[in-house]
Length: 449
Ligand code: ADP
Image 1 (spheres, rainbow, N blue to C red):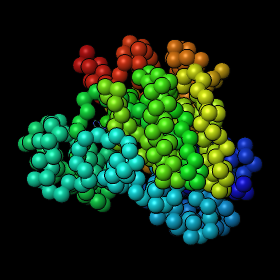
Image 2: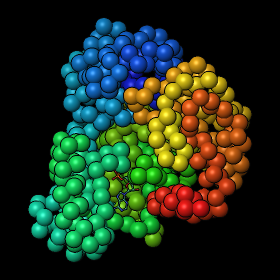
Image 3: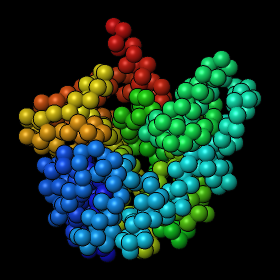
Image 4: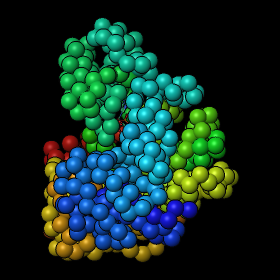
């Protein structure tokens, strides 16, 4: 096992990885910007290195600074966490060139899955169903119009290099499409430095269902069931649950087997997630994330497996320690993403926490960086806490979640806790009867009243 792991991230995920390392007897190195000197991940780590000024591009995205930090602290592995450099193939390669282990997939898999056009091509070759659309990139505007006529409007234009819910736009008519192509091309170039676009049929009422996998790079791949991440705003997840209210055990095993068979063919290494849209009992691949995901804890709660621990084990070259038959599901888990934002407008609201009290009790897990007196810096993503609750069944889980949200005290900044509380009195949510568009329309209705 590794002696020392450098965690190339910040916030709750850095803490999450630190916790797994600690329990495995691995020492940790935190890296941080000057804005994060007081952050909990820095306080808890065995060592810490300041890697630059507040702007992410100069610190958490600064590959040379991070690798230097690993070298001077003698870390034998780097865990990239979520976001930042976690899906950067060049970073993974550089780490390995320095004789340090990268806790993640092979750079080739990161690179090919990071290009969403290429990822769809691979999915098709591996036998996974995809959303109808352009087979590959859009060659020209004429090409786009022809494909849109074939698959039927509305269509969704997407950036090959898009991510984080950004870089996609719907076109309802041919007139719309012309304008959409121009806007998307411009935005893709500006945001991702790559203006390649592709097109998909815009599905009207799908759910977002994703399958968590773990592979050992030797053709052994297991899955941990699915997560339902249909509650979204601007294509970003707000609350996730496992299992999905829309799948039964047979459906779960069927999609899980398709995914593990596909990824075994490419000897996938490390944790990963295949994301699908699910409509009328059909799955459609949309993308693969070659990293740990923010919502991984709900799978851990229903499977009783520490995914980061397994990821670290496999990064040492060890084979899988679990067979598919050993992975059983117990009960139901929900994660609420708690952001330092106004719960209605979602305008970020960083600042000082005057009072903090986290909920607890049976089946409750809080992955958070907050503490009394901490100041949430304005420079980064506004996710400050994840409240994860497990119950024997969905109903027990919902009752426990309601109790926890009542208990949760975060004073000094606005958070999205009230939004989650409101959701918990909404019959459509309580019935599990929602799709990816529902949350936004529900919020729009609420603001009309
Ligand atoms: P990103 O990499 O930015 O997360 P994804 O391709 O994973 O982009 O899509 C993010 C979200 O956008 C999905 O969860 C879903 O809500 C929506 N979406 C993506 N493709 C489609 C589609 N073809 N039809 C309708 N909604 C879609």
